[in-house]
Amino acid sequence: MIYQCADDWRDCAHKRVLLFGMSGLGKTHVSAMLRGGGEWFHYSIDYRIGTRYMGEHIADNFKREAMKVPLLRELLLTDSVYIASNITFHNLAPLSTYLGKPGAPDRGGLPFAEYMRRQEQHREAEIAALMDTPRFIDKAGSLYGYAHFVCDSGGSICEVVAPENPEDPVLKTLSDNLLLVWIKGSDAHTEELVRRFDRAPKPMYYQPEFLRAAWEDYLKTHRLGETQVDPDAFVRWTYARALAHRQPRYAAMAENWGVTVLAEDVAAVKTPADFEALIAEALESR
Image (cartoon, rainbow, N blue to C red):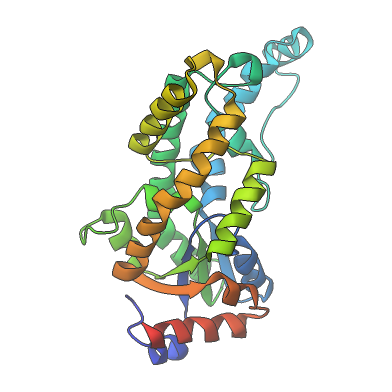
């Protein structure tokens, strides 16, 4: 770790952290709060994925749908309209819509093979965005003049690294440049995340082995063919299993590469000074 103790953190003139954990536990909220203080640069992995690495895939998908409409087809073919996603730090819908959900085409589902192809695109994009972090650390200071840096990682970071491998290239690169901080949720947080997801199920990235096993199990358990699956029902069914799948991976990342803070403590953070004190406590208790 780049900070071996709380004093290292307190005395450092240029603080650098990466926040990780399940989506919905405060990573983006805290990052935005830090950015709002004027001294922290906010680097969003999901935003980088959706703009730099998957932006063309997303736009092409929009155009593919637009080409089905005669009026839009004519306008596109004559370069009379411009179609692009309006992705932001707080609205990643274009990215999740592109990832899609497998299942019945009449319910908006993708063929499972196409779904897995897009999942692989996301895996490659996420790794690339994470490996861009040192470059953005340099840019944040040398170009924009920010003193500190926060990397707001996606919930799927644990799916693209090997936390138990001391030679994992992504984790080595990150830990050489930032302090990795796990925002750990309680059982109550998990229940709330499941309820929230059930109300509005959205596409997510998962390890291919996990997804293939979940898909085969779902088809067998529900006695369905691929084109009979309700896409929302499948991703709802998968989500709770994904939480259980990810939890030990997050824990291993924190144990081997960083520190842990509790989601309820993060929720109480109101200022950059509060955040800096919370990280100092985490380093002291490690």
